[in-house]
Amino acid sequence: MSAPFPHLITSAGWSFTRLSQFLSLAQACRTALDSGAPKCWPVLQGKTVVNLFWEPSTRTRSSFELAARYLGAHVLNFEGSSSSVSKGETLFDTVDSLLQMGVDAFVVRHREDGLHQRLVDTFGAKTAVLNAGEGVSDHPTQALLDVLTLTQQVPLEALKDKKLAIVGDIKHSRVAQANLSLLQTVGIDVHCAGPEGLLSEATAQQFNCPVHRDLAPALKDADFVMTLRLQKERQEQGVIESLEQFTERFQLNHTTLERYAPPHVKLLHPGPVNREVELSSALMDDPAISLIREQVRNGLAVRMAALLVLLHPQPYEVTWV
Ligand code: CP
Image 1 (cartoon, rainbow, N blue to C red):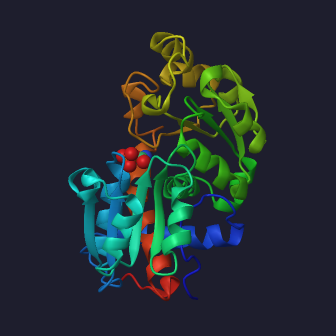
Image 2: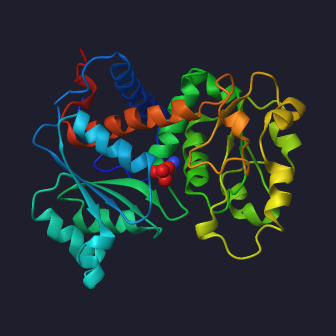
Image 3: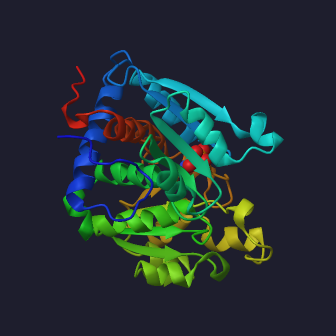
């Protein structure tokens, strides 16, 4: 089967079949990573991947770089701040210049919503574009790694009978938007909870998900709960009354889970975590409940799969032994 995506810039519009196929590939990557074999599957030898990050990142950027290297590609990490952008060059001229050096894929994080589509419209015939985080609107590889993490607990086909609560700063979170989009394909019952200033009614209506102003109804019967940090870099002043009040009402910790959620509930968080704000340290580090470290490891597998589907002629035929 040939590569199904010319680009990977959105969490919306995935068919169930395509998602299932992609997750199988990502799981194969995860199994290969866990096998203990040398991390060297040179199936993208000769390809060049540029990481173009205009916002900070730890997990996404590192995992895209490692994924490309493990698959044998050349990797260029491009720093906007130390480039000729600081002399007035536009992002599009920067991409065009790098393209002349022979780039097969651009992995781009940027604060501007809609930028990735504009990059595809301009350069998409010459290079693949991967969305590594876009404004407040999308972060598709994060949503894919989150769904992969869910499927390691419950088969994809059975997730439609489960409930997931998303808690915290949903309004300013591209992770929330990305998950709300992709989870439509999965069919899981999604509930949102957070203070009024951090919950967009438009988002709730768009994705037809119940919105709660308290933890209790969101966590009732929840199989999974995903909490999000306060995205201070994107918030207007005064969206929450105080940090203390937010923490008191919406922090996830052992007490809140024991009080409101069933005993089997599992915790997700995309990172970075602000310990003791949206999530207690003890719960974050509780291996019986927290899937956060699994999410990070799955991020590497998902980004290997993403590079394969864009750059390998037969991504689903790759052998891992
Ligand atoms: N979840 C996530 O995107 O983390 P980074 O900002 O560290 O990449």
